[in-house]
Length: 450
Image 1: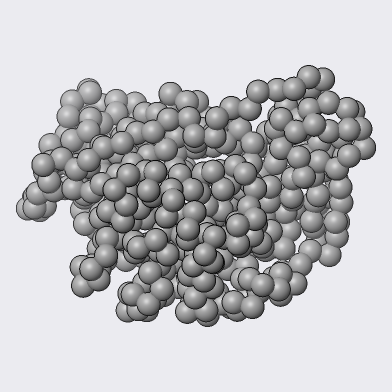
Image 2 (image 1 turned 60 degrees about the vertical axis):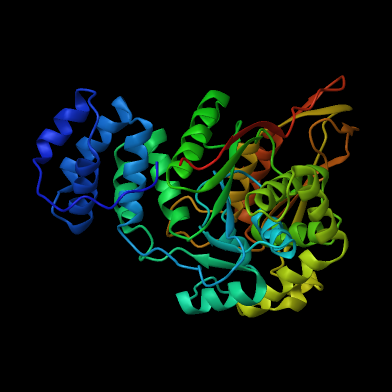
């Protein structure tokens, strides 16, 4: 399905739309567009929109309805146009997790290997981290770019990190605000339309999705993650985009660092070829899929080799340093980490006995980091970029009694007791070796519909 022109605006009976979806019937393309247009403009009150969202939550939407909802939300705002730049434009989106700093690594790696990466990112909320929060811990860095500046940085560096503005899918902002207070967040069609309307507004040719599952993920159950991945991929394909999704494990944090400046350091170390094994594995695979979708490689094996070359040659790090400088950041902080925000206090969580790490409950560790000040319980909360935690052991590692498992960085000592208690409860130790789950659980691949 190639997107068609938007239906002409005609006032429809809102109670009839609600009744139709309540009874499990499909909404037409015209009905979907009419609802989005009228709600965004303020013609439909919140109470009627909430009723329709609840009907969608309960009854669902088929693929065509979801694609139409995505397009209607996309068309509610501005769509970027980078057609003047000849290379393929490919982005990556993660559904959120703990310690997930892959964007800071794969965007420069993919750019170094030949695709353009126009990345519009968000902020963290709750136990999950946000790409913009991590980047803004770099002194001077600003993601608030005009379209002209975003285009300039993208053309010069091969990548750009921007913040979503009110011009991007304003319908999504209004709809999500209602979903958040009406218990309709966990709807796969509504999640799909929210994610894809913003990503398609970037003017991309391809998209790689990292759909997390496990205790630290939004979709904790594998079957739900699988359904979301399939919905995202099919919606992207319906709009003529090349889309791949990886379903990845989030039962423990990704990498070792959780916290904004700490994750910047770990990202830079990974770009310099010194990253932790799991983070390197996932970044390599996500980048490989980006290069394949961007036609910068003709197979995943050759794409993986291009990622390896971008890292070992230093080109990926150079790309990151160049975009940091172009967006006002201090590139010297990528060499001298003392220029990044520093926490005043350091505490260690040690093992209570000999054995093997069998669990690092990701959600609890993310919440502990939030309590320290690294995340937001509310969207208007101010974060502390210096605080967080660094794991010195991961699942499967052998540990001795008294050996350090986690280092905790803080500025407010009053927050420490609760955070330490949560961290200790998140760590489980088994007497015998444990089997580690694969990091990449499944792949959902698709090509655009004709």
